[in-house]
Amino acid sequence: QVQLVESGGGLVQAGGSLKLSCTASGINFSDYDMAWYRQAPGKQRELVASINVDGIINYADSVKGRFTISRHNAKTSTYLQMNDLKLEDTAVYYCNAHRWGYSRLFWGQGIQVTVSP
Image (tube, rainbow, N blue to C red):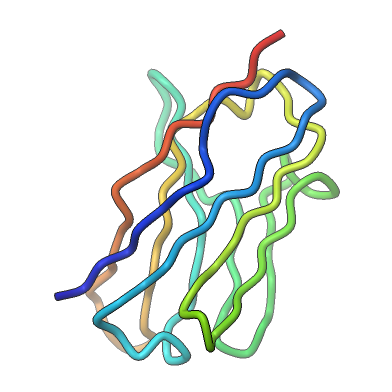
């Protein structure tokens, strides 16, 4: 029933830009905090950016000033605009939805972002 469908990944050269989209269904989207995580090969999954139900945003230090998270509740979507991409940004990116007070988290399928020299 619950689906988080991601799109927009791919291959881009260092310094380039990419925009990831995550469209949710099966949830009352406006009740959920949204976030983007990523996992690079051999690394732990890490939080990249989050935006809560009130629009409060947090970024990992490594992406601050380069990435922008946003949400559009009417479209039940969250986005991650990635600018000035670096080799270290190469990872599988996951969309996440969390409702405050509930332990269950929902995840997108993961989408590959590869940054080339």
